[in-house]
Amino acid sequence: MKFIATAFVVLITLGPVHAQDDSLLKGLEPVPAKKEYVTNAFKSSRVVNGHSMELIGKGVLDVRILHRFGLINDGVSEWFGLDQASMRMGFDYGLGKNLTIGIGRTTFKKELDGFIKWRIVRQATGGSPLSLVFVTGVSAYTFKNTDPQKEVKFSSRVGYYYQSIFGRKFSKRFSFQLSPTLVHRNQVEPGDVNDVYAIGIGTRFKLSKRTAFVVDYFPVLNRPANSTTTNSLSIGFDIETGGHVFQLHFSNSTGMNERAFITDTHDSWGKGEIRFGFNLSRVFTVKKNQKAG
Amino acid sequence: MKLVGFPLLLMLTFIASSAQDRLLTRNGSISFYSRTSLEDIEANTQTAVSVLDKKTGQLEFSVLIKSFTFEKALMQEHFNENYLESDQFPKSIFRGRIEDLSKVSFDKNGRYAVSVTGELTIHGQSQTVTTPAIITVLDGVASANAEFNIVLADYKITIPSLVQDKVSKTVRIAVNLKYQAQP
Image (tube, rainbow over all chains, first blue to last red; front, side):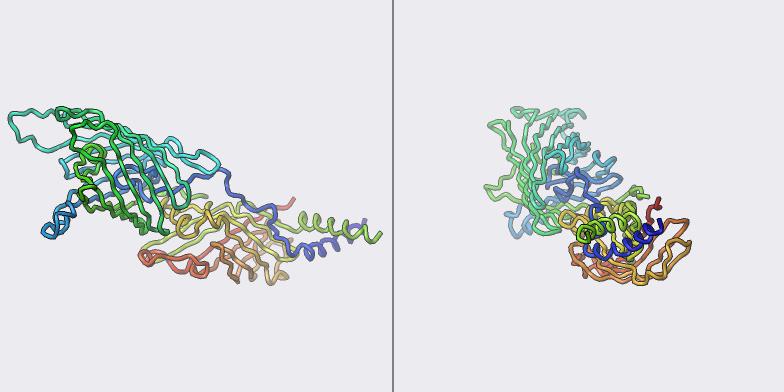
């Protein structure tokens, strides 16, 4: 018995000598979870105008200041459009990691808007290849009716939209999404349609860790033949600095909510009717994460 | 006989050594702190895996970068996406040894101040780290604690100039490994 014990001790002391090169952790190392959610498909919760497949985090308040300037081809007397600006101030809040609500007000037609954005499916490695996000929102003009002959009821100022976003982050750099959208306006000019169908095409190409190139295009599918509206197209750059995201872009639309930029864009890239604009997003963590342990 | 015996002996030693001398934990705690006048950043994980060999003093730990949790969701996102690039470098690993193992007796309760030297790999970059550490033995349960500073630039973790006042160039790392009791 004693012999065995002695042998054991000898064996123990010998053991590590030959095990030297091997990692002690061999076979024990932590392995990444098989299913991992894909994050950062877009830098911001908007591509430019349209919603992106990203949501802000739970307990996060995103204060968004948006500006759309005048037409660049107005020339130097209008300082290339910068003399006039239309703006939207918005507040988005993450109620949960898959649920965001937001409100905003735009100077264009003095419009108020609000939305609910719900992520139904989230892209994951070893899971769904796509994210599916549903957005619905409402908007209302608040401008005073100056025409005493015409009665403007509240209901006729209201519009709604319903949007599904199918998005995928294809690689570290490239993300793409399609967002079929229905915008309903309670009252429209004669000859126009109440229900406007559009399909949003949004894409992001990362240029560096903190900058990205984005395109946001919303072709309308059922535009009446005599309509003067055009498809909203915005091309820009996202620049991220800590809690801020700056989105600088060129666009033919002034609208900053779905009703406005999808159904109320009148300028055309083809005619050089382009304007500069930016979105400034600053996030505040209102409710902090419960710390692990 | 000798020829047959030797490989057998090697096998036996390996089994004996891993079963008897190696302490394991799968829920080691690692935290780090970046303090500046503008912003304090800290993150923690409780899922570091570590093995300590009582006989040789070899100490290793490995941790998944994505397991670190932050108070602010956005910080965690940026940490993974821009700073540590965790898709490319999913793990951080330390491989080293207790330099003055003779000071420690794992059978006796006590706090033993030791020095640990090894190679720390973060963001795909390896650097030699030497730090004072405390080995605590309490009723047969051993723990290893250490706190040390690392310079982010050594690991090619770059801080953009726009946020350089908010992220410290030197980060303090606290490691707290409580090993499982041996049967």
